[in-house]
Length: 151
Image 1 (spheres, helix red, strand yellow):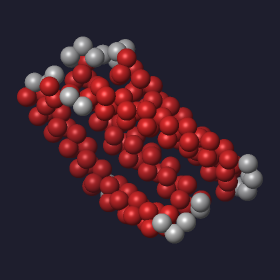
Image 2: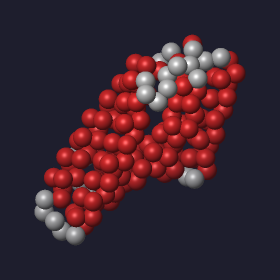
Image 3: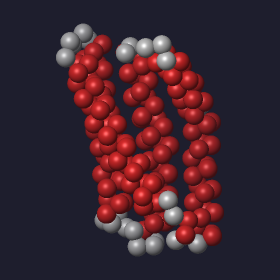
Image 4: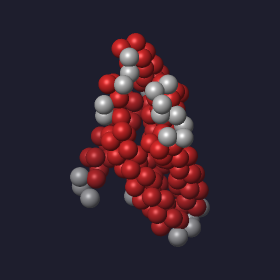
């Protein structure tokens, strides 16, 4: 894997996961759920918030490892891979929790809350689109899918 690909993985994770996805949860979904008894200390919300913090820690580790890779440290690729594997495991568990606990979320929301939440999340998507992130990330995925097909 090239240093560029590793940097792109970090960039995607920071920009999309943190700025788009986590913003939706932290600033909009979790406060609405708290009004329905799923406050910050409830099991699924606490787990997701803890994973958001872990997300940042893994990204810091990957940033540090990438810096060491670029400096020529022969052990740095292994460090990057270890952090990336842990990160992927955490993301899979995060998605599992979301799927399990939030698949029927609309059933607990009032129609007004649902409409407000949908509007706020759409606004975040539009902000990410205006920033060029979504188009850039779509292009990166296509680029790397094409490259990986030849591996």
